[in-house]
Length: 343
Image (cartoon, rainbow, N blue to C red; front, side, top):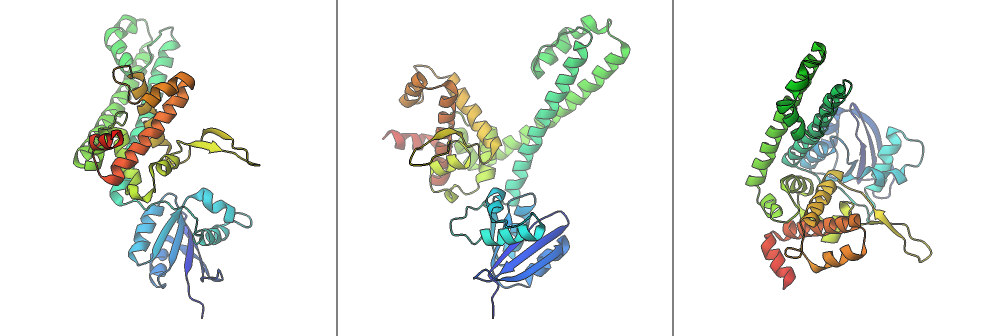
């Protein structure tokens, strides 16, 4: 009698498709369920390998199904697509997931815990508020520009102008515009207060997490990058090396080689764009403040003499990623790691 071995689950908002097969790939289950039916159905099945695409809500389902005794794996969506044999349907996607999860060379996404997800949502909300603040500032500046008033760019310079110079032109502007400006400034104040509260919560989280404290010691890794990395990575030992961690962040060259000829292009930009952006900003800050007295390493000075400035920044960001992996995987401080490298 065939024994169920692998299950592929195609998640959705309301309807969830399941495809189950034995160890030889023979289809045993092909079923469509509502969300509230999924866990009771899975609980009745024998222990098996369960695969899902890493998408919205997948980490929650992975934790719940894992508690039922199953071995759960999350697959990046781009690695599932090659296994879809026909047109895109829920049933075809579930079958593709079922086939992909059993591949011995497949790469999986580590399952995040509730606290990890909550911290990442803090960062996502903060990033959204930053964009909203920029949009409000641009609307304020464009509103003044319609009446021939030039406003300096940036939140700090805008506030300084509103405090020092707005009174000089206020009486020359229509009352309707002034009321509109007051409303937009109130909205800007509210957004900045929300950003301040989120920053405080992220800072408190950094102070209570030893891993964040270690990462902040690294020149070029700030409080936001440390918090986001710890929340995203979880266990750094999931990566075999710092090189693999840097590749996961998309900080390595994209390769398009054929016929024995190696062709390296720009960075792959795979993985978490938010963390990659933070590390590149950190690398840019390190290089900006570098001089003969505090040059981090000789190789960085040599590289700056022969390569483009942006290439040097990415190389430094790659180095930061490897250092981050070393500190997290070995649970040691930056000073101790630096002494080890020098020795």
